[in-house]
Amino acid sequence: MVHTRKNQARLTRTEKRRFVNALLELKRKGEYDEFVRTHIEHYVSDGEAGLRVAHMTPSFLPWHRRFLLEFERALQRVDSSVSVPYWDWTADRKPGASLWGSGLMGGNGRRSDRKVMTGPFARGNGHWTIKEGASGGDFLMRDFGRPANPIELPTKAELARAMRDPVYDTPPWDSTSAKGYRNKLEGWTSGTGNDRWRNHNRVHRWVGGHMLGGASVNDPVFWLNHAFVDLLWDRWQEQHPRSAPYLPDARPDADNAPLHGRVAALHEPMPPWGVTPAELISHRGIYRYG
Image (cartoon, rainbow, N blue to C red; front, side):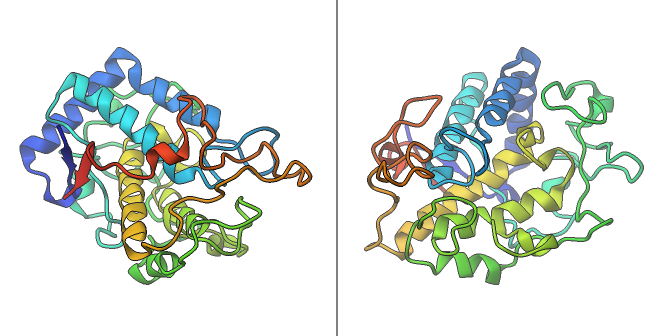
């Protein structure tokens, strides 16, 4: 049965409660931390050897689509009514947005140590101990806007610049690709300071705390960010129906040693599931966005 992923701003109180309860149950059973470990394992950067599938690579979008699906199915084993909501960070841009209320994600970290003090994932409630990739304590940390080095959430105009690019991705298929929708949405640039980050990356930087780096799944808002990114890939395909929805469509030539075996082409399997980007171009028949 096709289910609907809703904008978090339109969730009812009951929908928020059931989503949060399912998250807490996965955490209690230890399943949630398995997702944290998976993301850490596959957060491979440009400079590292081996295949990149999760970040700084064309498969950023299909890999996270499958990651989200695996997580959503785990939630639905707890409560079949639950789906992952999305956070439109071009609209809900303030720390006072309903997203950060005590009934959903909870609020910011306190200034002294960035420890989240409110909401269901606050360490004081005893249900959300950070176990994987922890640094500075076993409590969830956030640092909205990073006051020591201020940064804003992406604007509609910044997102629109990415959405206008009609080409999915371009060589060298990594964080230095100057053209291509994937890298513009993922958010790597050649800028310096906070200008280095755009769109998806800027959201991680704005939330701060555990949303920085490979262990970002420790913060449940990770899923709401990536559900919106997944929706944006849908919208991009609709806006560019004549464009290839994924590139490269063939493995880079073996003579191109820096790329050979480093990225997943359209019909090549992505670990840890062994599915290909081609299998994840569309989510029709599984879920919709509302």
